[in-house]
Image (cartoon, rainbow, N blue to C red; front, side):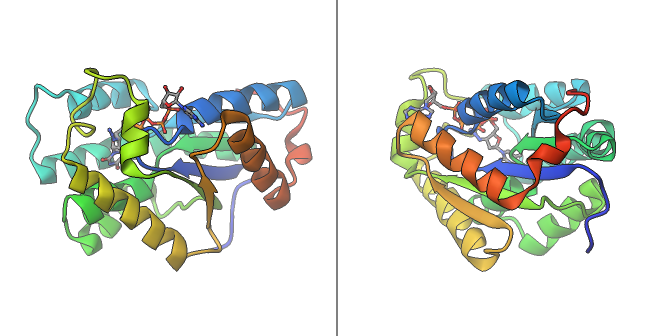
Length: 218
Ligand code: Z5A
């Protein structure tokens, strides 16, 4: 499908503790300095409604059945697409989204074992088929990623057995290998600044970011 928006859509994916959020903050500061219009957002929780859904999804005290979990992630996404992502792309911004449809395939598909066809269908319904132009996988072994997170504060997903997290990582690597035109893999085990350099290089190699300079940063 031909890209139909003036903006650019990039997603960041990876297992827990890979450093996506940290890298997005650093990147956003850099883009501010360059005056490049961009929106940093996340899945789940990129809208007011999504933040409520996110609280339910990550609360370790609330049991959530696998199908309910899947539908809640998709409900969050449908709202996010309509309220945040598509309007920003129409305005011509660079949209940097922390997790997107591939998280659902990794967590609810590869790890939880729900049907891939069904997930694909729901992903398409929630997003209207909008796929990112570039997806960056921050790759790190599950044990190393989990060890970076603060002890005792683990949310519902982080508390899953280590086998679950192994399946998430293996799923990501399989998806990245299957679609190398869209995915780029970054070794997320290295120092923050080294990872940040890689991220900036990947973006500037792929896109004419200078074309976005001077547009309103939202
Ligand atoms: N999920 C799902 O199941 N299905 C779906 O469809 C979607 C999501 C969309 C969202 O929670 C959860 O929902 C997530 C997937 C699931 N699973 N869990 N759990 P989240 O948004 O809170 O989870 P997350 O994206 O995994 O956030 P995270 O665990 O915080 O990971 P991160 O953003 O990649 O890492 P970070 O916060 O930037 O860094 C973590 C720590 O590592 C922090 O202390 C940093 O200072 C440190 N760090 C970062 N980089 C480095 C380097 N390079 N060296 C050393 N230390 C570092």
